[in-house]
Length: 483
Image (spheres, rainbow, N blue to C red):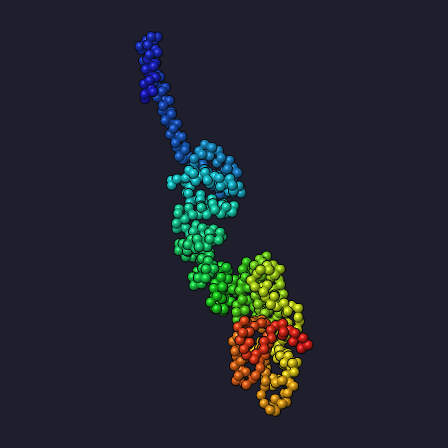
């Protein structure tokens, strides 16, 4: 209105001298009418623009969103680019453009648009910050930018504190980075929000198992398999928990369940074999280990573990061909693995002398005969022989040179032999038992023979007693010509 008055004043001043008063009034009425019409048109135009902006443009944008969902991405993208140029601060337009880029596989461009959307988003925006950050977090994960992904998921735990998946993803990122102490609270929070989150229960259980918190591990893993019976990793680790507590049958059931999945089959078969090993069913154990090798894939760690258990089983069975061959396979992969180098050094003679290998794997009857032949080869007469176990024989004998005299006069033996086939060192307590046996029988001499060695305490004990010690090297020499 002030502008209209100014025009009227200017018009009056301009026309005073050249126009009559009546004409001036008519002229002024026309000017005012024009100005009023222009003002009304301007107001109407603004109203039309407002209505178009408020109702028609959003409708058009919603149509573009539907076009993206239906696969008409290229056309929608062209229109969105034009709209973004006109309204660069609109977070929803940037978000939709990001969605279009994502549909066409242009992930970096999509991420750029999501970032722009985040800059302008408010509580009243059509797109929510939580939605945008979820998209960004997933893109960072796919690009293996784990630090940025973790930042986004951490923000999401604040924006959506009741969404378990955000806490689970943070835990997973910490665990994959080796920070299990930081991962565990997030897994726990995920299971607190959503107790039926099987994967969070599983990862929580695995961390507790590795921390030797077996009770907590069993609780979480049991819940994981209850929620999802096809969580084969949970079955595997639950089997390990049972095995650590000597619950062998329960462990076997869980390992058997885990064998149904290709990813876990190799480790599960190793677990089954280790259970049979614990039960001293070594041949069953070896059969499981042989199957496990077929599913070990390219994992050298798994292969070495299998080889090691196979070697241990062979050693317990005194099948040194099996034991040595598996230790040698481990040496080819990693010479520093566990005590393999020491094992091969211990069994060096077994690798080069067939006689001691034959002795170690001999049947009980053959084992007894070889022990008898060893004693008789030294010109003794065996008067008593007792097989204590499949690894120990006790022989009482008299000197062959005056055996008849001994039987006729003393009527008692003169020497006792303890013969062992084992790879374990003979301890002092075994020599004490031998000495007690000598005293109770009135025997004046003892000979302890072994395919292994003696502990330092055992050697010290024998020095002041009438006991002769014969270690592995001596035993091998005496076996020649007997086996």
